[in-house]
Image (cartoon, rainbow, N blue to C red; front, side, top):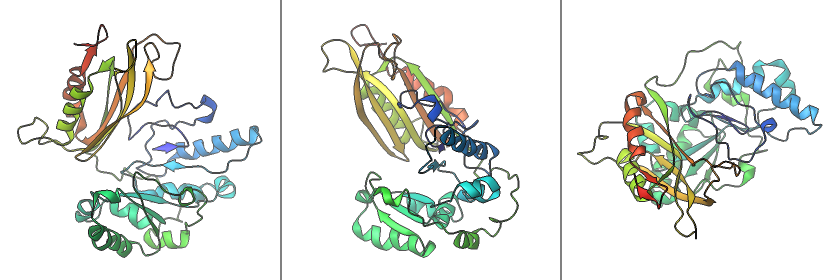
Length: 327
């Protein structure tokens, strides 16, 4: 859901203020969702990027558009031919789909869905997390199935999404002729479309100021994404968890905190340290004396019904800054 650097994730969420980009380098979409239809705000954003580049006399090398995991890529591709000015200024070079090798077989078992649509439309397919499946499963059940679905795409194996940048930028693999075989309406007049994704899928953003106990946060989030039979989360469907939390930095001489990146997909969860930050340096704002803000995005079904429980769960992970005692 990103056009260049910043937007909101799947309809909801706040941009991270600590990513080190200046305001004039960011074009933020009004609602951030690139998963539903041809979007006027995407067209406006692309025009603004071109105008800003022209004003600085620095031509754009590439524009990278990241859609949500629920996206149908066809309407986004249509943007580059539906607008006459953009069609003259830009050339769509490629559509890339990243496959989670651990979950893709289950995703495709349901028949027609977003995963299938993204595989069919892609001209570069990254088979990611290959280290989490056996070579036999990878070759005979995943790669062969992907090749059956899309015989034209370049398939690249990867771990931690580490691929040659040439497979992402400047690849010039996209063909409208091949794309229109999948979507005959691609070259027709654009129309306003109803959302194409499952309306029961939504997201919530949970925020708390302060620092959290890492062990307690890990136990809580593990229960959310991989609930036990007796867990309150056993009947919930949460697809993704992502964001960051701050924990006490025990190696420092004085009280400080450490930022951890949280990433959960289905029943897998990783919490990895990013960098230590001194007390009084909230996010990237070194002049601020406020406590750091923990922020997590949860994506799944009927998330509105879970927001209060998630908020309470994060609150229970907080610790007091006076000697880092539990609240």
